[in-house]
Length: 111
Length: 116
Image 1 (cartoon, rainbow over the protein chains, first blue to last red):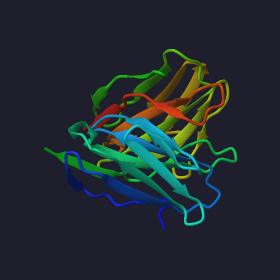
Image 2 (cartoon, rainbow over the protein chains, first blue to last red):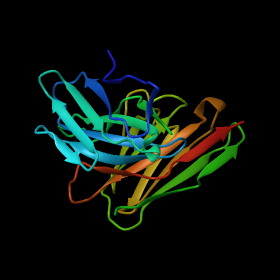
Image 3 (cartoon, rainbow over the protein chains, first blue to last red):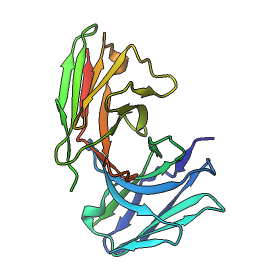
């Protein structure tokens, strides 16, 4: 089983729509969770950290369900500029500081 | 914000040659830097963790004698791909963690290596 799994998509949604995607992680000891955004042939950029209580940043809402080991990202009122690949990222902690990345979910916002 | 640079942005080299990639934290000190590799349509894979002043820690399956890492200062880590082969062609990305202990990592723009 892969450590971090995401639906690769692509998700094609019209501008202004609300879209959500999930990811699951296999290591129950994972301690930190993030969503990164990666544009084509570019480096990943941190979108937001994910906290147990859930958190919101503008049009973006992230949720963490530790019992089920999944993380979600909700994008409201989607913009054309939201088109990108969204990477679910996990850190297992305990001295292992490297990040474990999912393959990403490709999102295409259509005008 | 925290800025990480990488040099070169892209490089094409012949099989058997060695290539050095530099990763710099421009506006902060980074006691720990990380090197990742991403093949087309694949996720980023951690190659090694680089700690300033000490030996790098390599992930399983990554040859330490092939991928030489030097972290000589709090703002610079280098990755040297020795005796490169076409299968080493990939997108190499470094990241740095703020010395304050934050878990967030800031990524460099990446280096696209093509070995012919």
